[in-house]
Image (spheres, one colour):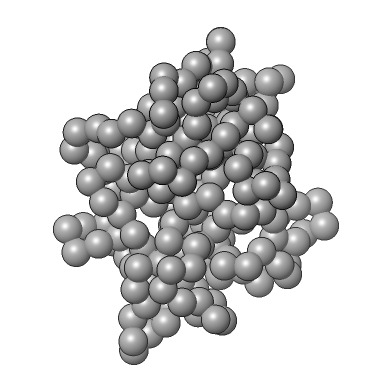
Length: 212
């Protein structure tokens, strides 16, 4: 896989206070998901930790910034000096998670340059518009497309190490009296939240705020 190095300038808080790291640490699951060496998983990214395997799955999302007028398969995703998408070639993505995994479009190419983070899809997504969120999907037991449900957040920017090396991921599973600045992290879709829209549905100890 071609290396695509990405780093961010400076830092900014992703929560209203200091987040507590889960004791023992976790490793990035690079078997059930694909990552690119040198990519950075931004702080605040939703994740799913497994206490038994001590592995972490990353919730991959990105907001659509532009769609090529002549080819709807070419999509520019939002990124800035602090956060950027973490998709890899081969990832399956959808706007609305439904249907079979096989029918979900896959990412065939990624260009992450000064001109923007541009992905090319194997097929156009019906109804996709600027401002929509692309979600990475996996194949569930019924061969349908599904999303991993988050139960924690990544605490710090995490560099993906080369294949064969272990990438350590620090996560927070309880924001306590603090909250995550939702507008400063990768998009959080409604399916990840409870009915209030304030907490993760899989972990009510993770709270969000719409403050800037």
